[in-house]
Image (cartoon, rainbow, N blue to C red):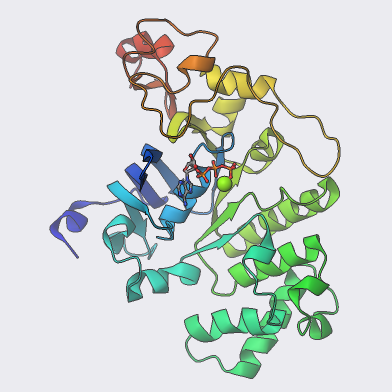
Length: 351
Ligand SMILES: Nc1ncnc2c1ncn2[C@@H]1O[C@H](COP(=O)(O)OP(=O)(O)OP(=O)(O)O)[C@@H](O)[C@H]1O
Ligand SMILES: [Mg+2]
C-alpha cells in the first residue's frame, strides 16, 4: 500500500469516500467529462441516492466504483477510498489506484461491492440456467463451498428474495422469468457474497409500479438484514425520497447539490434541484421519465467556462454564471450547493 494510503483515515461510520473523482472519455470528437470532480461519502448501512437526468454521469460514477469503466473511458483523477474491514480503520484501499483487472479488484467485486442493473437480461446470460449463474459467482468467490452447497444457497437466496418454488425454478433460464422475477434473481445473485455495498443502477425503471414497490421494499429489508450500504441511482424523485438517507443531485458530470434526504427535499436550493422537483412525473404506465426542464442541454463535448446549468437556469446571472465555475458552498452542516446564489452564506455560515 502506498504512503498516501497510510495517512488516510475514514470516520468510523464511513465505508466509501470518493474524492474529486474525474472520469473522462477521450474520443476523436472531443473529451466527454462524464464525471467531473465528484466527491461523496457512503456511510455503513445507509443509502446514498443519486438523482439526475439522463447523461448526468450517474452510471459512469457507479461503474468507476467497481473499476468497470468501459474503454476509452478512464479515471483521470481523484480517489475512491474503501474501508474493507469495519474493525480495522487502517484497512483501506484506493480503488482508483489499483489495477482494473487485478486480483484485488476481483476480490472486492461481489465480496465487498456488488451491482444490480436496470435490465437484468443484460447481466444474466441467456444461455445458462439461473442456477449456473448464481452458483458460478459463489464458486468463484466463496472459499470452501462445493457445487451442491452452492445450489442449496442459491435456492435459499432465491426463496429469500421472494421466488417461491425456488427448488424447481432455480433450473429455469432467465427468459422464463418475468421482469420482476428476473430482477429478484439479480438481487439474489448480488447478495451471494454478502457485500458491504450494493450499487443499484435504476433497478426498477423497467418494472411496473406495483412490482417496483415490491422490489424497493425487498431491497430495504435486505439492507437491514445484511447491514448493507446502498448506492441507489434513479431519475425518479419519488423513489429517491423513499429509499435515501443522503442524496446527491448530478448534472453534466457534476454534483449540483448534496445533503441529507430531509435537507434536499424540505429545502432544495439549487435552481436545478428546484426545477427537478417541479417536474415530478405523473404515474401513467410502466415508464416514468422526468419531464424535461426547458432550455437546451449542452452537448457532451461542450466546454463551459461557468456553470453547466447556465443555459437552462431561471436564476442565471449573465456575465458571472457563464464565466466563472460556481463553488460548492456549504449552506448548513452537510448541505452543499454548487451555485453563486449561496456564496455569501459561506462567509457567514458555521462551515
Ligand atoms: N462508453 C461511453 N463512451 C463515450 N461516452 C460515454 C460512454 N458511457 C457514457 N458516456 C457519456 O458519459 C456521460 C454520462 O453518462 P451516464 O451513462 O453516466 O449517464 P446517466 O446519468 O447514467 O444517464 P441515464 O439516466 O440515461 O442512465 C454521457 O454524456 C455519456 O454520453
Ligand atoms: Mg445510467
